[in-house]
Image (tube, rainbow, N blue to C red):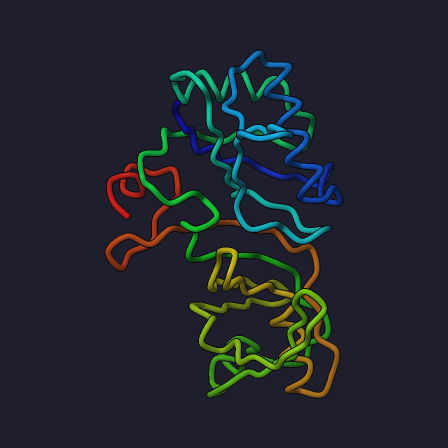
Length: 225
């Protein structure tokens, strides 16, 4: 068995398909490509595929990742070519590497970067500087139907704005994932006005190795956990 970690783009053509539908799309593409996928055991075997933290509906991305497990050894370039030809417009494979670290992609991602357009803050000279000056940034977060107030300030690594555009580098992964919409909600509550982030794109995701950030399919990412 071998596991190939792939990086792919999710464009505007498919920004409203769900995480589950995207996983099903990859499974169908693997079948059409004739790839010998690894299957789970049990009554209802499933292709062994692990994707990173789900992308919110309506977001685009230049840096999505998945770990695909196969019953035979495949060269990453072969997977790029064979699987890439079977994906629909809007889903494009950008790179691949053999996964030799133990952590799957869901557990491995530590940081996520987004870019977006800012609406409602045209008269604020430097929104990022203002936000980063706050000691705390509490906001109500709803997860699995339960609401609780969390301080998201420690989750912000870098927040940058220029004109009506912005970028956010924050905690990523499944357990701690700073969604830009949550940041906009927190800022709105703090300022008492509606601030909205639109045209949100996930531009990068990173794993952490010895205190440094790397692309999850880079050589450095595969050398050690």
